[in-house]
Amino acid sequence: MKTLLKTNDPATITYVEALLSEAGIDYLLLDEHMSIVEGSLGVIPRRILVVDEQELRARTILKEADLGHELERQG
Image 1 (cartoon, rainbow, N blue to C red):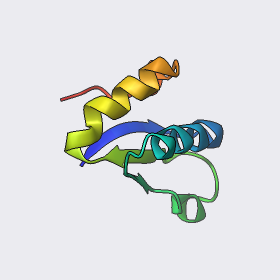
Image 2 (image 1 turned 90 degrees about the vertical axis):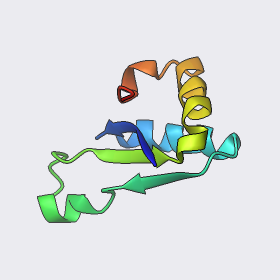
Image 3 (image 1 turned 30 degrees about the horizontal axis):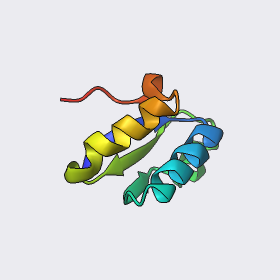
Image 4 (image 1 turned 120 degrees about the vertical axis):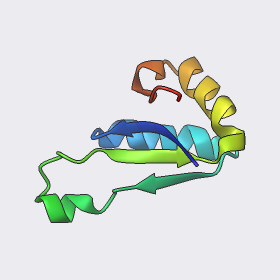
């Protein structure tokens, strides 16, 4: 799996989840419950991962939705 993006913004997470779901792209949201451990400070960003084969399509969808600035660098 590849990390698509990292963010602390719950609105961005919700929007990205909706875009990926609508496109039929499977994703995994990690670190969602870390806010309990960190005391809800928003220090640990949430990560959205996609399977390797869907990474390019997912990146294209997010760029078309003007979220290219949120994407993790490929590497």
